[in-house]
Every structure is written in C-alpha cells, then in structure tokens.
Amino acid sequence: MQSLTKRRLSAEELDILMRGATGVGCRLEAELTDGWFNTAYRVRFDDGRAAVVKLAPPADAPVLRYERGIMATEALVYRRLAPLADGGVPTPELLYAGDDFLAVSVLDGTPWDKAADRLPVAAERALRRELGGITARLHTLVSEDGRFGYPAPESGLSAPDWRTAFTAMVEALLEDAAHWRSPLGVPPAQIRALVAAGADALDEVTRPCLVHFDLWPGNIFVGVSDGTGARDETGACDEDGSDAPDVRITGLIDHERAFWGDPAAELTSLEFGGDIGPDSDLVTGYRQAGGRLDFTPALRHRLALYGLYLGLLLVVECSPRGYDEDRVAWSQGFLAERVSALRALG
Image 1: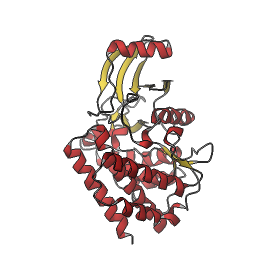
Image 2: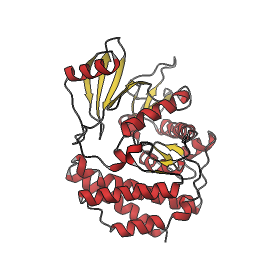
Image 3: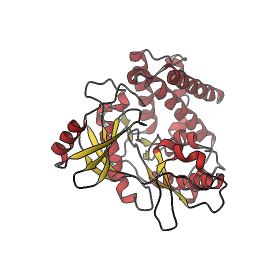
Image 4: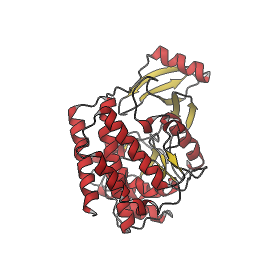
C-alpha cells in the first residue's frame, strides 16, 4: 500500500541503520508492501536470522495525534506479550527496538486474508474459536499505571477513567479532521453529542485491558500443520475440507494501534473477519478461554461508539496518508453506517 507516511531506505542505508543501532548488519531481501503506515522490510541479519524491520514515518511526516509515539507502543506491546507467546498469544519476537524502528522475528504461515479462499468452512470456524481464545488471553494484560487510553505520552491521550480517555480520543480525531478538512459527512457537534450520550455505558468499564484494535485478518497469520508440528507458508488446505490438515493461528502482528481500554472494543476490528455476535464461534472461544462478554444494552451501546471511533479514524487518516478517492469513499461509507447505527440506539 502506498502512503505518504512511509519512509523508504536503500539496502545500504538500512544496513547502516541496523549496524549502528544494534551492532549487527543486514541484507535487504524484500519490501513488504501490505502495510498502510510504516515501511516494512524483510531482511537477513549478518548472523543468519531472518527478520522484519519496521521503520517509523520520517520525523517531519504529518501524523494524527494518536499516532505520535506508536512505534514505541508496538515495542511495549511485544514486551508485554512475550510471557504469553508460548500457547497464549502467538506473536513475533521483538529482536531490536529503537526510537524510529523495530525488528521482529519472521512468522510461519501467511496472513489470514490471503489464505481465506483456501480454507474450508470447518477450518474457518475452528480458527475463529481459536482467535477468540487468543483474544481473551491478550485481554488479561492490564495497564501497569492503571490509566486508560494510548500508552505513548506524546499523544497526551490517557486518563484515569475510560470515559475521559475515550472522549479525548474522539476529540483528538475531530481536531485532526478540522486540520485536514476531512469530509466527515456529519457535524462534529453531533458526534460529540453521540459520545456524550454514551457516558453511562462507558463508565461501566473499570479495568484498562490491552486492546489491539486492529485484528482484521491481514494482521493474523495462519499456518497448516503437516502432522509433525511443522507449518507451511501458504495456509492452504483441502478444498472440500476432507482430510484437511490442522490449521492454526501462528501469530498476531502490527500492535501499533493498541490502547488500554474496554476489551469489548476489540470486536470492532474482529468483525472484519466474521460474526462477532453472542453465539458466534469467536465469542464462544473467547468465553471458553475465560473471557467475559455479556451483550447487555450498555455493551451494545459501547460497541456502536467504538465503531464510530474507528470510522472517524479511517476517514481522517486518508488525507495525511494521501489515499486515493476509492479509499476515501469507502471510509466515508463506513463512518456513515456507524453514525446511523449509533443514532438508532436513541
């Protein structure tokens, strides 16, 4: 994906950066182009390790307020997840991190969105249940200082309670929208009123859990076991599902949008991969792993608020990233649907 926030280096420049920061040089193998914000390269370190190096945008690149310091946020999440990596929350290993880059190990498998058309229904359902369990374990991590919102101090978007933090997060996007003259399709005053109307529902959240907030299928890797524990690079399996190999999730990536907040907010991006209703495979797996999701009117109200927030984010980011008209139109439609859903709650 092309984006104005991407910072590209030559093979020589990347080697110099890594050698100076880590003491280990690298050979550039390929640019990974699926990302929307950072630049990512697959490299081979001089000691033989394969890795993915992510580069933060240039220091002078325009970014949204919540995006300030999110490279450090991603490194923080990798460190917090490390104790859960074995059987809990699979994710790459953080190898190195600096102010403007991080390097992680390479995952087996392939992104779920690229394997989806080769997965039988039974495998998809099993993966959704597994993903629910992984998400529940992810949500056992809580903010060490008890604060809600984005971890990076540069954003200034944290608070001692969820209502205050979430309201500030929305306000920051509205300020960014005003700066970029983003076509929201709804007056900011109405958005503020919709958020204020959800104050009581937001106040029910008292535990600042780690929320990835970007668990769409492209950020979830899957692999196929050959019966020995090894996994291939394609995620493919038998077309009709007969004698299908064991398909498992091999890792979650791109933790940069993470914040401390309501675990139910995770469903906002998980919905891009399938059903998130109370009887869904995803929620079944979540509950079986010890997670709690009670679809009360207050929780449904919060889910509508989080959809509104994601819609705002998707529209406002189009301008600083330089997205094309099709992406802008899709984002505006997504936001309009979420505004309508929230209004329908009365």
